[in-house]
Length: 246
Image 1 (cartoon, rainbow, N blue to C red):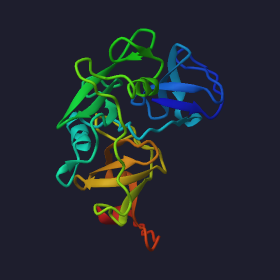
Image 2: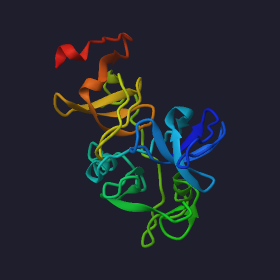
Image 3: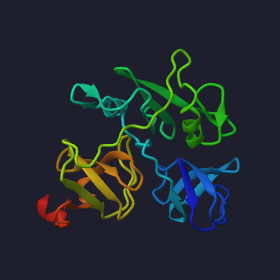
Image 4: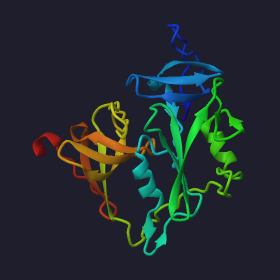
């Protein structure tokens, strides 16, 4: 994924990466240290402080969700019909190779999965044509098929429209009390203050949700959040201390 530098940073160690304000960096990994990301800039790799950058979120990037969950999202139905068109896609972290990425694409009544490959020069590709970033790869395959045997071009998933029959007037959310750095695939990276749309309470210890800042979906510890219900009509927030409910 990509990030934009908010400040200039001058490396002080051999494994760090220097950059200037406004530079666009490729983020390779966010799992090594909660304060430092592994990134690439101008063909060099190194670590950068995460408070010096702003991530460039995309609706199509869903974080470290599992293959089965990607299929459930893309094959969602509206009545008897599929909600999303053929070519609807998302990018997720690769389950078998942490730090790598996979592309999941809906076609007819199934989902095709593609490993996003990366060569020694840091270029991304599916087949032959190579790109400087995953963003460029996605834009190219909106015009060129991702499958050599079938014509499948990428299309955005349809968004749930407000006011539709399945829209919930009470949007349940949580705010992160602390930073959370995932330790396992499927967990959700959080910075203190991030707002999360709550999808499911797995148990008293873990919830599943979507980070509205990054658009990633995953699990996070319930005790890392302060929760509230946001009523669209009343615009009223009810906040409670988590410790009194666990």
